[in-house]
Image 1 (tube, rainbow, N blue to C red):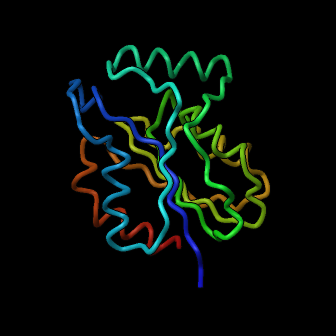
Image 2: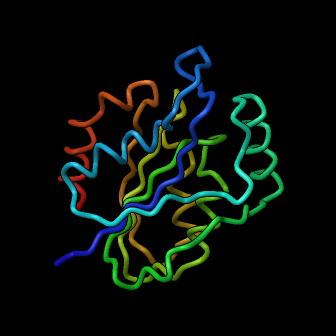
Length: 171
């Protein structure tokens, strides 16, 4: 039986929604993960930074851009002991500056993904998956990286059918 891990990075606080900034208690990516849990038997790991980005949207985007430009790898609160038991990793993240958040890079670089499938999905407000799939392939060259799924963040709560169809097609 295939073992699946859902690893994701999500941020609550001020988020951008189609031209407006509003405060959320749960990040858009986490909303999608909660929907996926309803139809996919998988373990869950939340990628959390020791020093989280600001709850303020503008400050957060500046911090994320600086980490990207400087190729920083933020320290995480914890990592799974290993991922050897998993065949597939569903990887969720918001599109930050056209790619994955650097905390996701920290997670990916911590493990050997040889022979594993990575199913990436991102939430965004217009950038789609951007360059994130290419970045994941670069960081995990021995993994099979499936075509990613982009979910409009402002529509995350209504994306159940979309996410379920994507999972059924790719798992």
